[in-house]
Image (cartoon, rainbow, N blue to C red; front, side):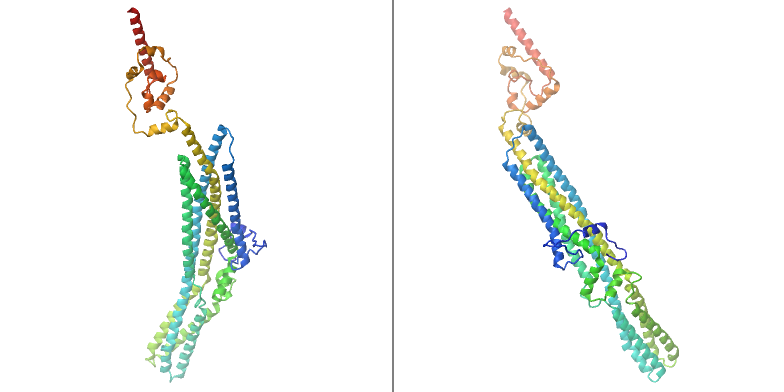
Length: 536
């Protein structure tokens, strides 16, 4: 368990840490985070292999379904076939909708993971700035002390060479200055270390950029497939549905593969986040050879953990206080007698003031709060935001894999329905006005042909006697029926050139009242002609 102040493992970390770790020999492996051990690597690969097993099962199901679809001849009735076609279409739509929901989850998970990794890199850069500031401050202070010892204190020894009491004070000051420089040099624990947090942050950021871009491309690819699949189903475009089926198969492989990678990453990260202090301390000590007391001080940062720098800092502060009192006494007693020593004494006092300011700054930098805060922020970014994002990406991959599995099974039957409808249209008469295909062609035609005059039908019908023989009865059908017939026959030149009597229907786009008026007028003309013949 982690003992870091301000960090506590989340519940999903506990849950994933309890996942059984098994190697390739089906032996239980310790769940402590140890990526350098082969058994632990086998356990993570075994978890990733679960996704491979799911991929194999989905491929078997797809093959069995497609074999049954291609080889088995359906003997169902027309009603059941239409019902099955409707179910197939809606199953494809449902799979696409679930995939779109998974894509939304994937975008959120990808953003959360990126935020977590960014927090880690930001904390590493802050820690590197603090460690670099400590080393730079110590090196500058030590260099300043050494320069004063070699120049001004040496000159003071020469000036006070004839006064033993002053010479003892100067030499004592020199020894204490050298002691302060030595104490400060021993405090510099990060100098010469091969591990550079800034370089680690740049490498992590580089990898994260490519990971983020890869998931963005995968999410966009899934979204494009879903949109074009819906377009193909809505417009019944057979070639588009076939292409999306083939592409869905490759995306299915990517989905299961990413799921295996995310599963192994989530479990491994949960093992690290369950007890990060022990692993960080061990690895840092191996790489940097830093004392365990120093690492424990910065990782835990508790009051009961002793400060490993306290003794050296205390001795340095005492030495600086002694130097300050000695220089004050030397200035008060020796300067009136040796005015030439005033210049060198002022330089030493200036060095003392600068050293005291650097010392207080160094004490603040060496305090565990700054580096421990960076450490805790890195843990929170990795184990909170990063872990949450990986779990959402895992859910996205699972939903995407299930959706594409269902789509691959359903889309072939959907385009089969498109083909059967096209075959039904081919069996119809091209001149049949009730043929939907003929209606589409008529609607695509630019404009309608010119309708002949209403009374021009009499010229093609011959004499009016023929009207009397085949006069159709007046129908009481509703107006909507004639309007539907008018819509069906409009735009078809063949039917507009046929006489009204032979068609047994009114001309296209004429209302029932006009039809009644036409029949009554024709009947009156016929009766008048008949009476004229009888009289003659």
